Length: 520
Image 1 (tube, rainbow, N blue to C red):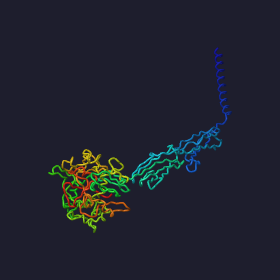
Image 2 (cartoon, rainbow, N blue to C red):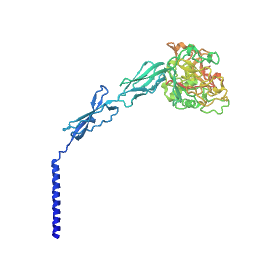
Image 3 (tube, helix red, strand yellow):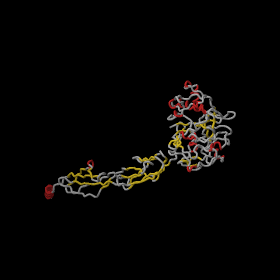
Image 4 (spheres, rainbow, N blue to C red):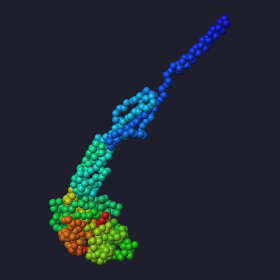
């Protein structure tokens, strides 16, 4: 029995050994019969972008790809994403050659402009003003976004390469933006007005006024209603008179006692005391019968026209230097003594080009008091500008008969309580952003006036250029000087923008003050 079991085990072992040997032979045989495994071969994918200039395609070398695949298989090539381009068409996937020389080329067309639009189809600008136009290209991912800008009339308006439009003179022009790609065009109708402009108050307390480039003259010769049919209620922009003013600055408020005293002290006892300044009057804080309640911010009063001329030179010399002093005699000597008749010494030819402080001319004063730009309400058209009607107070919403409207813009008999008030404290400023152009104190102007009812055109021939009275300085005869605006003790009629008054250049009283001006 034992022998039989041993014999059975032996047979089993032999069978297992024979099986193992047979299995190894099969693996070896399979290896011998299997085909060689294909090796990965390199192939190229090239990307070509369309040119802007000639629409041909150029290889993008930096984006040429070197990929690997098995011989005989299809390549694996995928289009890339390029800004402003799109794949031109589907490309064929080639089989990889045995030597790896397969090249797949992918072409990309530029995205073309389909349209252009502007942010404004119409634009209104005043002469010398600028504004940028913004062009939008469609689609936003178009390749060639170059634009050319043109104006149909460069005498009216110009446009630069960036779309900034400049108004040149009154009229109309078409501003066009045209694409380099496809020649698509968008337009804006440009209307240029000539109403003049006013810049906001600057750090020194001045507004800069640019009058119209054209003449200031009443449309159809009509100056509108006046308080009375008298020359002294008609202002200086009268019928049959064309006036042109150069740009100028004018103070937001009347000169305060504080500023007056600061300059007066500098000139008489301070650093400027050796300059030779002499004043006939020291000035006072505002005006009230008993003098109470007057502060440094009230307008200076009790100053004569002569005092003001000399003070303007002192203020200029103190802050800007003597080269800019405006008022000089024929020998170019700066006028520094108001006890003398400086009105007879001033050489007006020496005033030109000087940037120092000065009195406004009467035309400058009135234009600043009446200017409303393109606002037609309560105004009369003069050239391209609209000026407040002559029987209104400066900045008022109704004529002088309206106490309510007059009180909003002026300190005068109806609301002043028989005294001056601190400057700039009325409810409203006028159209130029100025306060107290009506009421508080009368304001000296530079101009000479023969009498208070004198026609302001008497010496126009001295200032006329090509038929236009340019920067007039008043009549040439007479000793008095102009006062405008009315005061705290006057009627609403006297505070109207058309009312003209006169005073002796040596007058100094509680109703007289002044406002500064200068040339930009």
